[in-house]
Amino acid sequence: MALNKKSVDDLNAAGRRVLVRCDFNVPLKDGVITDDTRIRAALPTINKLIGDGAKVILCSHLGKVKEGPNEKESLAPVAKALEEKLGKKVTFVSDYNVTGQAATDAVAAMNNGDVVLLQNTRFRGKEETKPTEAGEAFAKELADLADDYVCDAFGSAHRAHASVAVVTKYITEKGGTNAVGYLMQKEIDFLGNAVENPVRPFVAILGGAKVADKLNVINNLLEKCDTLIIGGGMAFTFLKAQGYEIGKSLVDDEKLDYCKEMMEKAKKLGKELLLPIDTAVADGFPDPIDGPITVEYVDSTVIPADKEGLDIGPKTQELFANAVKSAKTVVWNGPMGVFENPTLAKGTIAVAKALAETDATTIIGGGDSAAACNQLGFADKMSHISTGGGASLEFLEGKELPGVYAADDK
Image 1 (cartoon, rainbow, N blue to C red):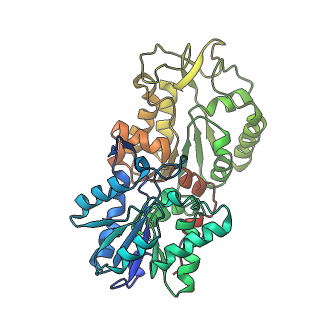
Image 2: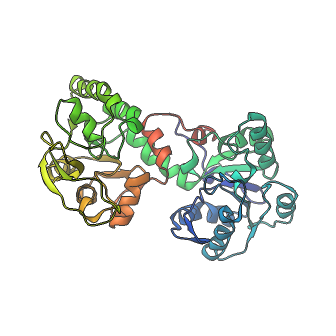
Image 3: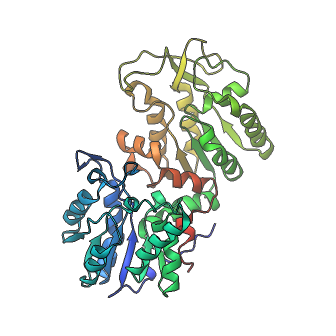
């Protein structure tokens, strides 16, 4: 994995037009941003470029834009939030074409230190480079607005989109530099080094619902870590693969052989593979998800046929917490149970607490585990919380991420 990339510190940005791909994919309710974490995460890179006297052109996607361009998925609220946080004017180009005449004019009018925000990149409909020519044209238009490019959108780095990876080709053609921002650099340092060069003992914790989502992650991490802990819904497929009764618990019957293979692989490599030894069970999934629910704790090997496993039990919480105590590096991706429910969040809280109390470098791999850490109040106790769910998973799989790979090597 090529990790030695040019960063925003390697740019001579004064007087140059720098296009920065951010991740402003923030949650909105009635046009109001409900969580500005991603905007705050982008500020160090933006402020650095402003301070260096660059002309800073920002771009990002927001939402899935399934209905075509619409005001609900416009970046207008982001422009407003950025103005407040930067304490300076942000010129927002509201044109749905993203790189049209309005964008060209706005960039032409910039002075050093000015900030322009382009409209939602997905409004072009060609962001995902299908057909390729259309994506290429959009990438070239983005590059035409700038001299250099900075990718600071780790949450999109696993996608070879026009504004994430393809644009770099055209920046290179015009003699510009393609660098990563501070946020990307941090992700590369923490996640990349954790997997490629961990301080040992290295413990990996995987949770979440489906084995299928984490097939390659399990396989890759078994080769890298010393102990692999599996909780969450995916643990039941492993338990069933061992021949145990799992009742109405979530199971992926097509992956039973794969689970057997992985347990065999762990044994062969001399790695410890820990599964839940007791489970919180209930009559069924909570409805509503955060509604009251009655649970009992049973051994994981004898889950009653009419019950569903929804969280790890107290003995497992202790087992997993003890495994973390002596670790020097811990990577965690995926909750231990239905953490959105107060009764079923205990397992996830226990793991978060164990990580918060250890001296190890603790890395939370985005998605639900990041949401859980934030929601349960443990975020400030972790060394690093990844900003990208899918991207951090692919990083943990050992894949090359297009958004990282496309940046220039030092």
